[in-house]
Image (cartoon, rainbow, N blue to C red; front, side):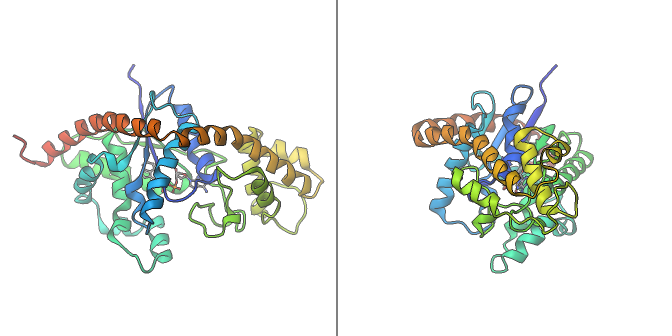
Length: 330
Ligand code: AMP
Ligand code: TRP
């Protein structure tokens, strides 16, 4: 039987958090044995928010190195940068013409981003989900591992695939999201009602994958919990619940088992041990990352070779699409 295809992408806009890791990236390397995987540094998505060009360049290469450090093997998976494969923008244009203003204006992430960036309400922010759909549909992906915040964008992707298939003829695979149970949404350490985000200005709200041990322990110690002071896993204690989810993801223990361990205590020992658990869990990734990021020649080679592999697959889909919509092709 032919292997199914997986696609996912992460924006190179800032330092990655454990939310990115637990919600998405940790699964990428696990999927590569069973599936044909495409993992993309979606730099074209990042410029919908103002970027400092030199930083974007550095962050893009850094994300490539981090992908590899978390176990993605660039000989197995196709690991590349979006802007190196022009078919993404080409398919996005065609999909724009079957996307409706109403549906795009209901996207939660779009509404959030325009309210946070009142001085930069650019059209790219509006059509961002269409570019994302193009990313996925170009490779005929069956599955898309993402955190739960991307669910709505995946719904839109499915709609666009079906709309195109119905309007012309079956062309695209209709993809399914793969959303993890406990790491699907890691919350801010300072405000458990907001998701942990790499664009948060308060650095103590997030644990970054490349944070050192001291920083991790300090941030967890100061994480917002509650004044109830009883060790439970329940919605009324969202700060503690989030920390238990993090503990669960790094230890493989279920929330109930963790509650069993710390029941009857205040949060002190739990927080201390969680800090060590997270730091130890991230250490091997950090060590590999430092080696890989230092080797620019290697990274350049990966970028080039993999962009060619991606482009080869992408062209196959794009040619079909161009033919179906009626573009003359000599
Ligand atoms: P982004 O940082 O928006 O490029 O997200 C990259 C991937 O990480 C996506 O699949 C997101 O759904 C996932 N992700 C981002 N933040 C979190 C979070 N706080 N919890 C879980 N997953 C997240
Ligand atoms: N929009 C995603 C995010 O913010 C990133 C992304 C872009 C993506 N294209 C994608 C994720 C395709 C999965 C598949 O997290």
